Length: 163
Image (cartoon, rainbow, N blue to C red; front, top):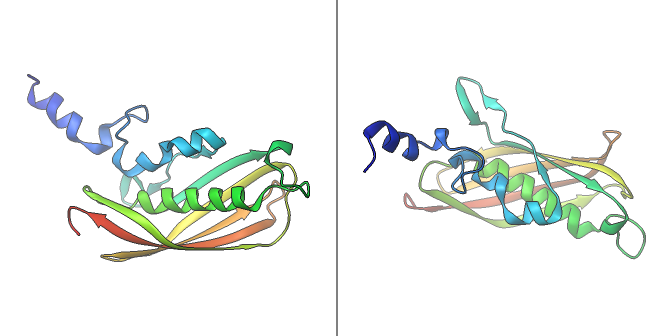
Protein backbone atom coordinates (compact mmCIF):
# COMPACT_ATOMS: atom_id res chain seq x y z
CA UNK A 1 0.00 0.00 0.00
CA UNK A 2 1.30 3.47 -0.85
CA UNK A 3 0.59 6.70 0.92
CA UNK A 4 -1.43 9.37 -0.82
CA UNK A 5 1.61 11.48 -1.79
CA UNK A 6 3.31 8.48 -3.44
CA UNK A 7 0.08 7.53 -5.17
CA UNK A 8 -0.56 11.02 -6.49
CA UNK A 9 3.06 11.37 -7.66
CA UNK A 10 2.83 8.09 -9.56
CA UNK A 11 -0.35 9.16 -11.30
CA UNK A 12 0.85 12.69 -12.05
CA UNK A 13 2.19 12.63 -15.64
CA UNK A 14 4.40 15.66 -15.05
CA UNK A 15 6.25 13.82 -12.28
CA UNK A 16 7.26 10.86 -14.44
CA UNK A 17 10.93 10.62 -15.30
CA UNK A 18 12.20 10.18 -18.88
CA UNK A 19 13.32 6.66 -17.91
CA UNK A 20 9.75 5.73 -16.94
CA UNK A 21 8.31 3.72 -19.87
CA UNK A 22 5.02 5.56 -19.43
CA UNK A 23 6.35 8.95 -20.17
CA UNK A 24 6.12 11.81 -19.00
CA UNK A 25 2.72 11.63 -20.65
CA UNK A 26 3.30 14.65 -22.89
CA UNK A 27 6.68 13.32 -24.03
CA UNK A 28 6.13 9.55 -24.16
CA UNK A 29 6.51 9.67 -27.93
CA UNK A 30 10.11 10.84 -27.60
CA UNK A 31 11.14 7.38 -26.38
CA UNK A 32 9.87 5.30 -29.32
CA UNK A 33 11.87 2.14 -30.07
CA UNK A 34 12.28 3.26 -33.70
CA UNK A 35 14.08 6.40 -32.51
CA UNK A 36 16.66 4.31 -30.65
CA UNK A 37 17.01 1.85 -33.55
CA UNK A 38 17.66 4.50 -36.19
CA UNK A 39 19.61 6.88 -33.96
CA UNK A 40 17.22 9.82 -33.75
CA UNK A 41 18.21 12.31 -31.04
CA UNK A 42 15.01 13.80 -29.61
CA UNK A 43 15.55 17.20 -28.02
CA UNK A 44 13.79 18.00 -24.72
CA UNK A 45 10.48 19.86 -25.00
CA UNK A 46 10.37 23.63 -24.82
CA UNK A 47 8.16 24.94 -22.02
CA UNK A 48 4.96 26.50 -23.31
CA UNK A 49 4.28 30.08 -22.27
CA UNK A 50 2.36 30.05 -19.01
CA UNK A 51 2.43 26.23 -18.75
CA UNK A 52 5.80 25.20 -17.34
CA UNK A 53 6.85 21.66 -18.25
CA UNK A 54 4.50 21.22 -21.19
CA UNK A 55 5.64 21.44 -24.79
CA UNK A 56 3.61 23.63 -27.09
CA UNK A 57 3.17 21.15 -29.94
CA UNK A 58 6.81 21.48 -30.94
CA UNK A 59 9.61 18.99 -31.44
CA UNK A 60 13.19 18.93 -32.70
CA UNK A 61 14.75 15.62 -33.73
CA UNK A 62 18.34 15.27 -34.95
CA UNK A 63 20.07 12.58 -36.99
CA UNK A 64 23.79 12.39 -37.68
CA UNK A 65 24.02 10.97 -41.22
CA UNK A 66 26.91 8.98 -42.63
CA UNK A 67 27.53 6.59 -45.52
CA UNK A 68 25.53 3.80 -43.90
CA UNK A 69 22.38 5.94 -44.44
CA UNK A 70 22.98 6.17 -48.20
CA UNK A 71 20.90 4.95 -51.11
CA UNK A 72 22.62 3.50 -54.22
CA UNK A 73 23.31 7.04 -55.51
CA UNK A 74 25.43 7.90 -52.46
CA UNK A 75 22.88 10.18 -50.79
CA UNK A 76 20.84 9.85 -47.58
CA UNK A 77 17.87 7.62 -48.39
CA UNK A 78 14.64 9.58 -48.83
CA UNK A 79 12.74 7.07 -46.72
CA UNK A 80 15.03 7.84 -43.79
CA UNK A 81 14.41 11.57 -44.22
CA UNK A 82 10.67 10.85 -44.34
CA UNK A 83 10.95 8.74 -41.16
CA UNK A 84 12.78 11.63 -39.47
CA UNK A 85 9.98 14.03 -40.45
CA UNK A 86 7.31 11.54 -39.35
CA UNK A 87 8.98 11.11 -35.96
CA UNK A 88 9.36 14.85 -35.37
CA UNK A 89 5.73 15.53 -36.36
CA UNK A 90 4.47 12.63 -34.24
CA UNK A 91 6.40 13.84 -31.19
CA UNK A 92 5.17 17.42 -31.69
CA UNK A 93 1.55 16.27 -31.93
CA UNK A 94 1.97 13.79 -29.09
CA UNK A 95 3.20 16.58 -26.84
CA UNK A 96 -0.17 18.34 -27.07
CA UNK A 97 -2.36 15.32 -26.25
CA UNK A 98 -4.60 15.26 -23.21
CA UNK A 99 -4.62 12.32 -20.78
CA UNK A 100 -6.36 9.32 -22.33
CA UNK A 101 -5.82 10.51 -25.90
CA UNK A 102 -3.79 8.84 -28.61
CA UNK A 103 -3.53 9.56 -32.31
CA UNK A 104 -2.79 8.09 -35.69
CA UNK A 105 -1.26 9.79 -38.70
CA UNK A 106 -3.73 9.54 -41.57
CA UNK A 107 -1.85 11.52 -44.22
CA UNK A 108 1.75 12.59 -44.72
CA UNK A 109 3.35 14.60 -47.50
CA UNK A 110 7.02 15.34 -48.04
CA UNK A 111 8.91 17.39 -50.60
CA UNK A 112 12.65 16.87 -51.02
CA UNK A 113 14.54 20.06 -51.79
CA UNK A 114 18.23 19.12 -51.87
CA UNK A 115 20.23 15.92 -51.43
CA UNK A 116 22.19 15.14 -48.31
CA UNK A 117 25.36 13.05 -48.06
CA UNK A 118 26.73 13.35 -44.53
CA UNK A 119 26.28 15.58 -41.52
CA UNK A 120 23.55 16.55 -39.11
CA UNK A 121 19.91 16.63 -40.18
CA UNK A 122 17.59 18.70 -37.99
CA UNK A 123 13.83 18.15 -38.18
CA UNK A 124 11.73 20.83 -36.50
CA UNK A 125 7.99 20.20 -36.30
CA UNK A 126 5.15 22.39 -35.07
CA UNK A 127 1.46 21.70 -34.60
CA UNK A 128 -0.40 24.14 -36.84
CA UNK A 129 -3.89 23.29 -35.58
CA UNK A 130 -5.23 20.85 -33.03
CA UNK A 131 -8.98 20.40 -33.16
CA UNK A 132 -11.25 18.02 -31.31
CA UNK A 133 -10.66 15.15 -33.76
CA UNK A 134 -8.06 16.26 -36.31
CA UNK A 135 -4.67 17.94 -36.08
CA UNK A 136 -2.26 19.40 -38.62
CA UNK A 137 1.53 19.44 -38.27
CA UNK A 138 4.36 20.88 -40.40
CA UNK A 139 8.04 20.00 -40.39
CA UNK A 140 11.17 21.54 -41.86
CA UNK A 141 14.34 19.48 -42.21
CA UNK A 142 17.61 21.36 -42.51
CA UNK A 143 21.25 20.41 -42.92
CA UNK A 144 24.30 21.48 -40.89
CA UNK A 145 24.41 24.82 -42.77
CA UNK A 146 20.74 25.52 -42.02
CA UNK A 147 19.66 24.94 -45.64
CA UNK A 148 16.35 23.16 -46.23
CA UNK A 149 16.66 19.52 -47.23
CA UNK A 150 12.93 18.73 -47.10
CA UNK A 151 9.57 20.01 -45.90
CA UNK A 152 6.74 17.80 -44.71
CA UNK A 153 3.24 17.97 -43.30
CA UNK A 154 0.81 15.50 -41.84
CA UNK A 155 -2.76 15.14 -40.68
CA UNK A 156 -3.47 13.28 -37.44
CA UNK A 157 -6.70 11.86 -36.08
CA UNK A 158 -7.26 11.75 -32.34
CA UNK A 159 -8.28 8.49 -30.71
CA UNK A 160 -8.67 7.43 -27.10
CA UNK A 161 -11.08 7.50 -24.23
CA UNK A 162 -12.60 10.87 -25.04
CA UNK A 163 -13.20 10.00 -28.70
